[in-house]
Length: 172
Image (cartoon, rainbow, N blue to C red; front, side):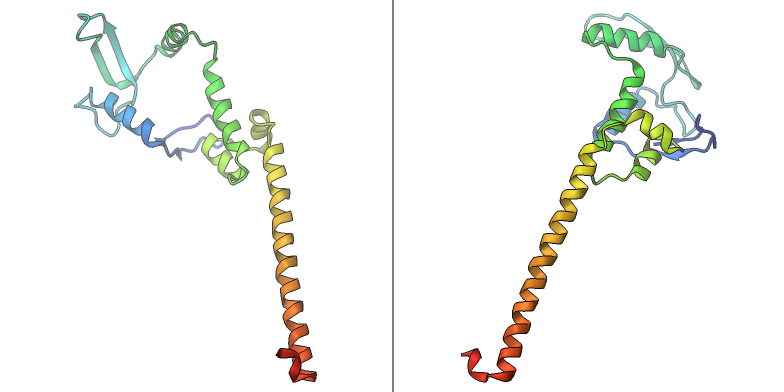
C-alpha cells in the first residue's frame, strides 16, 4: 500500500507492506466501489443507512475523490460493539512494540514501517527492546561457543598432524 503524504518532517510518501489478511479485507471493501481508480481514497466519503436485516447496511452518496470524515464515530462504534477500551493510537503503539520485540527486526526497519524519522520518536513508542538486547547477547554467546568448538577441533587436528609428522605410528 502506498502512503503518498506523511506527517513526518520530511513529508515524503512511503510503501507500507500489508499482511495478506489485511489485503483480503481491503480488496473485499474496495469491491464495493467498482468505479474506483488508482487515485480514489481507500476509505472514501460515504453515507450509510440501515437496510433490511438480510441485506445489511446500504452505502450511498459515495464520493471516491473525498476521504471519509467519520473516523472518530466509526472507531467509537467499533470500540463500543467490541467492548474494548482502546484508543486509535494504541494500534500504532502495539504495531511498533511488536516489531521492537522481535530481535530480527532492525530499528531502521521499524522506523521505515512506522514512518518515524528520528530515534527519539521510535523510543517514545517502544521501550521494550530489552528482549531484543537479551537475544542479541545470547546470539553472541552462541557464536562464541561455536567458535570455541571449531577452534578446539582445529587445535585437535593440528596436534594429530604434528604428532603424525614426528611419529607416523601415532595415526594408527
